[in-house]
Image 1 (cartoon, rainbow, N blue to C red):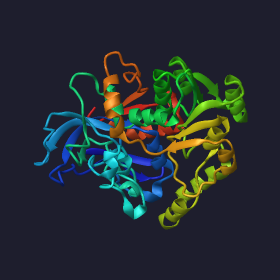
Image 2: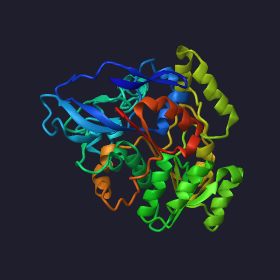
Image 3: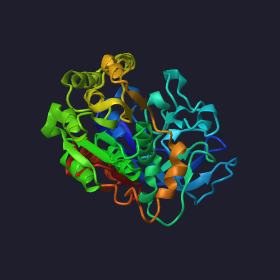
Length: 396
């Protein structure tokens, strides 16, 4: 089959690799029909190379059609249409039963002290082959894939793999009071969808902050009050307070993560870490703080006292410094973590109807063949051509 493989920093290639096979009797193999390019994939492209090996297959946002099912699979059969969550979760362990699928005890990567395995996401998270490929082996065939109906285009359902549950959880964790206010920092795919969900759930004011014109324009079109970080710079928190009687918003969703703009010292540390030999870079990343924390510091600044900070942006440093005095003094509530996909599926599926209240159909700014994936990564990294969300189509 053809699959996108990691070969080095900023070097991904579509290659011919062996087809996946059933390993356990509860496995299924799907033919991938659509697969997303995620902002987290750029962390692999740019920063997390020490935990990858040449040939690793990337991608964690696939959907497709079941091609083969193991003998113990009872709920799926060849021809069924499914979305695959990015969490590799069993659905039946202590954590999964409590809605914490990203902490699944069956697939926890204990060697590295991490939670559930993830598709296509480094040794830290199980080194499972990813979904930017023509075929994908999926374990836990009865409890992991999300069966979806025939008929509507893939774009109606594919975001159940990551974007929708991640954005929904970000809003849930933000604890926005009825009619209250929220700032979304970062208007990439997760930030865009989180802003839409916050409006759908009744937020009175949704402020979106970014520095890319295409992202700001798209958010404005969805009803978001936008602020251009490029224009405001360090004054963005004051601009938010000006909108909220001097207090700041009730909640902030930080949807940027480790590769925030600014913080030149941390940015240099990230670049240096990416260039070091793996034997040196791995312990540095696991023991030191190498993140750019500008977005997180901004979030702490502009949330009102007694407010809530919801962090969905991915961070990679183990010892990042935080302004604990400010956080304590402001009496902040903070929630964060990888999305627990299956915890939100029953809530999200009814919204994926012909009325399309969240605007999932048309959410992708680019649809490209899998063979063009290396170009898509370059474009996404450079924010070229207004690229915000890309779907890759194997076989096209």
